[in-house]
Image 1 (cartoon, rainbow, N blue to C red):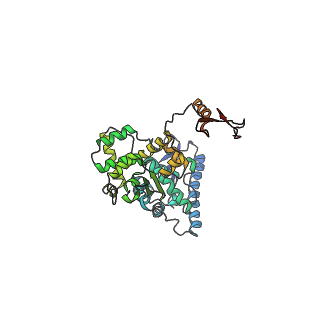
Image 2 (image 1 turned 45 degrees about the vertical axis):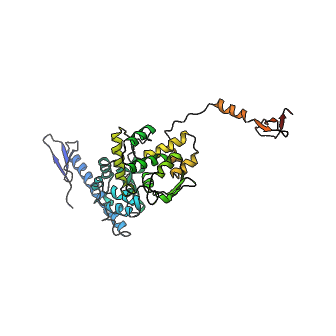
Image 3 (image 1 turned 120 degrees about the vertical axis):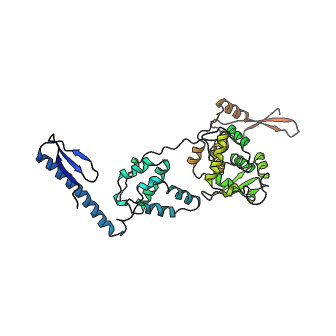
Length: 368
């Protein structure tokens, strides 16, 4: 094996060590030749021992996995993508085209150091961080990586951009400037139904039950069934759309990215920033919370399987809490129940309450 390190002395008498692989020189901090030779020998032995340990690891692992020495990070990327279907597969195919991953695509998994991953993370975005974690964990689960490259607590924190709901005023300004009737109706339904853009764009006439005033469809992301009652305003919009086949025949065939681009353009004309089509779901969740819509109903309507996820969508809703006095007054009013007497004259039945809050069914008829 070619000697990697070389010892030399400069004019000042200080001994230095040269790394032929990196081209860097480092001072040994001594003018004593004996001490410099000892330090040089220790550095060389440490390097040889590291190479020996790596070769021993490859030898042992090769007994159970012949490809262990040749497998690069391209392998877990491709195999993980094969486990996906539909829109998720499309998303993974776009992710794997990220140029940041070019830094490790052809790097053998067993030779990967934390520095390699940090270079990828610095060159990429938040998405790179998210999906590199998944690729790394997949390689661990498959046994292709014997130990973590970066332990869980040392991964850089994810810094997502702030997500917010679209306001009613912003929605109205967008509707006013959208001249395409199909796209205009699409944005209106997103506001009223709170569905994801893919689900709303894929709606068909047979998804509408006019008698029950219900729109039902299978969510593309989770395949769960969403059943949403619609009101008078949404009914007017639905009646203006085709009564057979797709409700949005042109909009459904284009990709999600293209729909997002069209929405971004109209937002630019309306001077609206910081929102996307997904902001309609945040808006629906916040509106439901403000008006007191039961959380379990809102969660079902938006297709959220987790309460934590749903509450994250509605966390910015500003709810005006009624005073305690109002609720106490309402409680006192319910103690008096107006009834009709047997002879037709109005009577008042007063319900007394026990100290523990229970009703002992003691009723006194007033005016009898």
